[in-house]
Length: 227
Image (cartoon, rainbow, N blue to C red):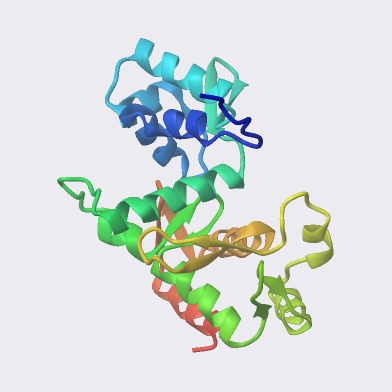
């Protein structure tokens, strides 16, 4: 039988890299946006040091993670926001299909409420932010979310330099499917800038992937939503 030529990207190698349970746990840990050592990732994966190194070599070769040397340690992080978006979407599919962890940890409700997805806000609060921006027509929907003129004024009022963000290689606005809410939250350069401001102004503090808002920070967040 004659085999037809198949052109374009191949899904199978990337799926195989992310599909191994140990590597999947490592990638999920790196969704925090924090660079982690091989030892820390070995603990996340529940494997020994040598096995972790072999897994990380495959992930690095496959372009999903990158290693950074700092002093005596080598740290690993995701290669970019496109990888985090893929992982978040895969988590959403897993949740919809019923592939959940058998023993949810105590942090699960906090993860669902507010968490870091690589470098932007996710969870209930991330979805609420995106829907507020859409409702007030600060972001226009379409093939891709677009910041409106009204949205530019809003961003400038928050102290965000839109001209600088536009010079970045990543999209200004991007919708990321939230795995726990199964609705969209705001990613892209603007999503990252908004979360960076929240952390800098101490609206919230990070505990791994979880974001814990202070009472004052929660009030300011609600004001940001226009509530």
